[in-house]
Image 1: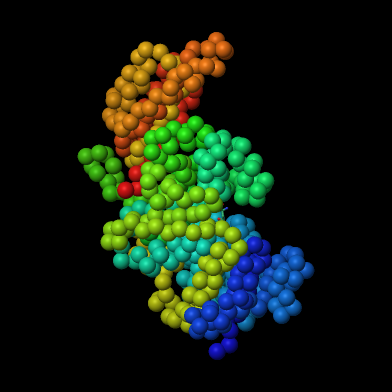
Image 2: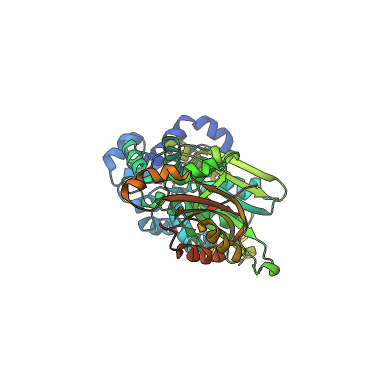
Length: 453
Ligand code: HSE
């Protein structure tokens, strides 16, 4: 059988990796797919550079629509990124009857509902393994490998840039801004790192995992997003002393409501820095690596680890999708794996809960005047709010006092409190009361905590 023909839109880092791996492993891939898979056409604005990368046997054009118009192309790989022209081209490719493979998490997290509906109506597949956690086959695992399970929660380190920064902060005891500069110098962070450090990239990925895990529509606009820019070296150190590591986690959970606690059914979808016990495997995922923990009712806890970015790791995921499509494109559309794992007519309308309704535990750090009765006032506010304390750590006062004494200010100390679970709205109210105490000298640091047990 003649090879299936693929058109590639955008040949950057991932595109060239895809081209190279397909060429290098073509025999192995053909044995798996049942026929060859060839990129025969590439669209890229830099035609000369693209032609140099793929050699003379491949047609290179600057106009992506020439790829969509080619009747010999069965599959289009979109590696342009963003929601602009990429969205238009994906929808046009679908309208032209092409299957689509994309690594574009932003596009699918925001416009997935429209794109998957268009693909279903046209009877084509939109595959996106590369959109979440790069080379880790987490989409395949959630959609197929874990299909017997009622998935309970997912927690993932799904942004390598921020995990690299947090690892460096912990290793070297440095603050965020210092490490970010170094990460940019070494090429681990983009010149404009906003999407990574503010948690947006992780939220795109968490949104996709949430939809597949629970059979709900993609709802990026409902995700709670908090990045790592406000984390200080001190909090990482204190967390360590308490037996925890701080990681930026993408979390999605199915929450069973409890009328006695005033909680309702819903889905949690959130990205924020999080204390996790240092003894958990995921707490030991360092540098730019990614890892995702999935809890299913039948399988228990499973962990997926690997490279979340990079040329060939991401190409590995793109090509897995190409092989899937090659195997399935002649099958009746109704017999394919649904885009979001659940049949389109069986999707749930379980709401994404506002952050104020999320239940979790907390790390609090208060810089206070080292005076009699301060701790009693702080713990009194928590007790009044019905928030139970798990542990308290007071930093050795004289460490802080040394420089303070010279400045003529009152002696200060850091009080660190770990709490048990409580609803976020209640914690917000308690923090506001503690913040108003004259002895609390700086804005209170609050970091959420997950035991991942
Ligand atoms: N910028 C992402 C990261 C990789 O740092 O993990 C692509 O999703």
